Image (tube, rainbow, N blue to C red; front, side):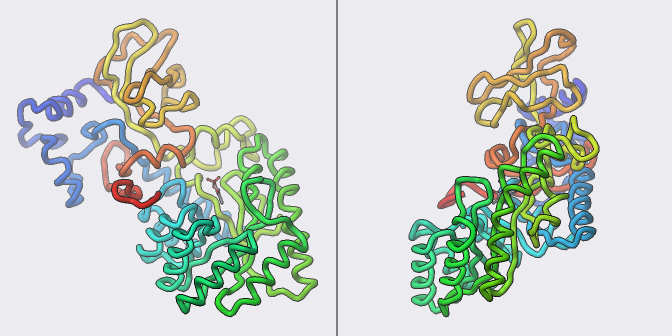
Length: 408
Ligand SMILES: Cc1ncc(COP(=O)(O)O)c(C=O)c1O
């Protein structure tokens, strides 16, 4: 919780109050955006941030990146982390700097963003079903020959081959196979091998390997149960790989995995990991339990919080915050350092913190930090990460834009 004294600096600025002169820890809010634009973070602490806003704990974030990079090196598996959870070029570049061979994306728009930012080896994990996506995937393949995407349908392979031929481009494709999630993936065995053959047969397509995303295993509670589930879900791709080898197909990448299975899938047939959430972590992931601690998944730290302000207090057992539905408040969110406070929803721009006792000292203007439940959903609502070392803001990283975006 941020103190009343710190709050009053920020509040007087926000409300157009007296200009704060030569104060080393504050300045008028009118300067805020200008300072952000020129990355002048002197004296900028969490206390002056607008709320609700997302704050990255840089120390913990860096530890998370290192843990994953070291584990991958130790077990000899490559990393192509998923950017859907952070939608940030700044985060992706740090992942690549630590050895990732590219990034994995959920949408063509994410792929375009990452590729334009100079990141090589983007793997788009959805096939282009629409003409719009197909045209963009072919165009991106032309601009960036390291770009790859998946297919799980013969008709999409044909359409991609036709579009690539017309554009005089070679598209790099990986075959997505079923790995326990019914949302995508061709059946393993001969159907998967036949699809790979179809790719290989086209002079405008290049066969890069396979994707087997065992998403059902990612949040399976308990380490042993999760390993069992991942083993079962990846059995199909291993059959496919054996058949492909027998029938003389070239080998290639085998991409999959998640934050929940990062320390088991190297032994289950994958050549690279698509983990995403480990960078920041969320409360649903924390609850899955780890190899050494069944109660909480402590391999990675909560490095992202939403800073919120108490805006009203009139009724017993609750205070009103600015963390409402539009800020993606969830009942499974947690309040950093205050497990006795429960997050509740009140409306679009209003949220509640409920308590049974101990809340008498909470006052209007107090601030709390919330750990969100699901990164993918929450980060999608915000425009930037304020990056902090302790209380001090040291950087701001944009989150992929919404205004004017054809698609996210
Ligand atoms: C295709 C794909 N790969 C990998 C992941 C793994 O991400 P995480 O580590 O956040 O569970 C996801 C997450 O939804 C995904 O959709």
